[in-house]
Length: 444
Image (tube, rainbow, N blue to C red):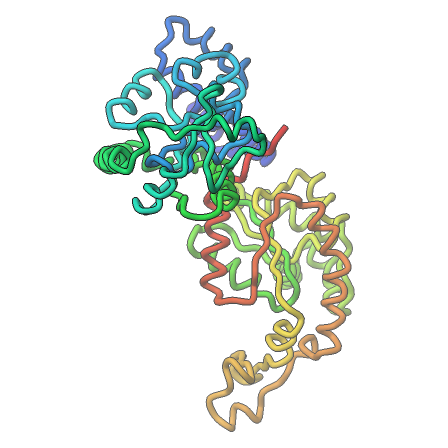
């Protein structure tokens, strides 16, 4: 009986189970509920969790926009009317809970930040605007107040179009250069403490630039999702034309993160070399150079991707699918990638990389006439070119790839796009950053 229990404990989840939990955000959902329980300590945890699920607000924005006086905190939002409602006592109301909130200019110091935390209020994103003091003092001098509506305008950046409003604007009494300097001094004294409290969710943005650019950077930040402690098994697809460096990047990712590196072409050759039943069926196509039928490729891939090492460590796959039909077949087999990359490389670079490749038939060493020439005339004389690297054959392979890539890009809409015409380690850093950070949350 004990042996049977041990076997059951060691048995991995079926492939769809982990993918389902990841796609539906179940790990993050449980983590969020646990956090809320520990913060609020309800008398009836079950009822509290039920209400939490009913609110369905785990992705609602909770944003603080902070910064010194005149840094433009109240100009990075749309619409303006929303700011009037974003004050502390409103954050527990139903609309703020379900729709999210933006809190401007608060907290201003460590004590206020701790007060928010003790009330169970934790922003998911904190935007910290900054600009040189000289710029801020100059900006403050242009502020004007409408005494009727209490709305703030600016002589340079936000002048009202209504002549009646223009006539009644007044300069606020507390905006003398001396007053602004005093406020800036207080802000700089409190800033380090605020930064320390929120440093994991905080981004500093330069406010000394056009407001459209500031808004763009703020929106880009608040739409990101922070890294989660939830289990994550990489399932990565690489697409790209021949010579774009997919194989090298797959090898680098596999080496650093211990995921299984699977090249579809290599998998077919290994099946033939191992004399498996599938390999015997594939061999005639490999020998003749004809495309292997989709059903054979899919069967071989499904078998490999369902093996224990792929399920537990994750995988990176290149060379399949080649078209949307194959992508749909992967989907039906419940093999769904969670990161997809398309490599882009100019035609001239592809030709330069591939047409100048050479191989030493004696040692098997690979060379390139421009980037890695043979070290001696003797080796140079015996180098051979693989027929597939002849320009005519490269053209054929490119035509096949480009005839399918647009449909594949439409099929994998959450894909990342890689500029493959740069240093391999720069490319690797970009790919790595896309793998380890969560995907943006889709709007319903």
